[in-house]
Image (tube, rainbow, N blue to C red):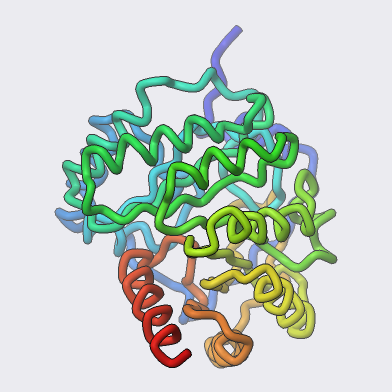
Length: 318
């Protein structure tokens, strides 16, 4: 039996192969970015290849990869390159993953040290095939990175641990990342079409439980817009996040990876993003990033510094 070729769309996304093609509208000027070509980009790419690491920057087709990699910033995607979920917005390959690699946490730690990162984002595929959803592996990656680079702040972007007991989340929080991120991705009414394997209120409760376990830990979540939601639904998600004491909100434009993915309903204008940012700060978020090209990990290091400063300022005023 031939191995899968993840460069072939039908093999990368077998669950989407029979979906009808959705039209891909022309991107407006405010979405376009230059193709990556800098020396910094190439150096980051080479370090990722040397350590046999997967990045969400490449797997998800992030439009900011050129800018981030040119500055030596990359988001590590651990636990393989094949996800057990089939979200209709996502370009990460779907299927049955390989076994977890026990040496991967060490390779991530080495790459972070080699890149000299002051802040690193570690994300992962969903691993519903593993009893703890990969929580112990995530925790070990945090500890290995902390050991090699004690001054580096660590942000994790985790799965939802939907099929796991409470000890899965507890293991990740116990490893003490500086930021715990889990994205709600969209408004609850679109979950059946956009995130069919997930549950909105479970993800919301996950973020709330992080604060229950460690009230001092920064929490972060994000959504995409342009999927078919309306403004009122986005504002309601903000209220839900604040009720769960989420500190940091990201809002970015959904971009359709292939014709088989969920269609772009519309391109949200920069003025509308500015309105979302203003509304979110009014609701009490410590930090908000809301622009067309915002992604969970975009400018994460600079944003973390601002997040920490915002909390200190709020505490000083209290």
